[in-house]
Length: 268
Image 1 (spheres, rainbow, N blue to C red):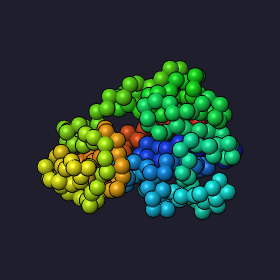
Image 2: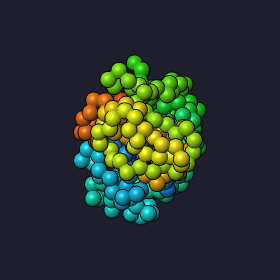
Image 3: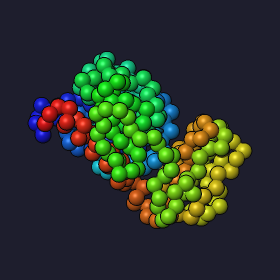
């Protein structure tokens, strides 16, 4: 890869699991990456989400560290520290100051929340909700199908099925979502072993029980107000604590698609 290409600025909207996996891949490929997030991120796969830096100041994922910044003026300093800057900026208004060559919408909202074709020289949308050539230049497939990670230059991605990847033969049976909105409270930690039916959290007056036995692979941060349908917890019956802090194969495929899209666009 040419030095000129790796000096390009990449602005990634989102700091959750997928956005973090993409940021990790591009950072390791020596791009200058910056992430934007909301004031109260609701990432559930917190072991591999740079959005945790919004709460804790810094977050490490597989040897790469993201650091929270308060203004655009701090970003070059963080790059100089060989870290990824992340800033609270839900509208990604920093693009008008940072002037990124590449903007990637990795919010995973299943719809476009305001990304435009004119936001950067290359605008990439991850997953459904984007149309290549209309509101973004390229789309990367995020559905867990044989098209996972594919770069789409016309049209959009496949409709999201909403079904988690099967682990130990279980899909939706190992995940809990909010039946109603409310305050999520837990004293459990990612990586803990739980048994099926064990109380692990509360949501208002609702007791959240482990849907199956295994390791808590993903768990929403305690003290967060959530809406109905929000993913709260994911159990992995494989029972390996290390997997909670490893980027998933699906996310690596999406990140590879984002990198491929950049190389295609800039004809490297």
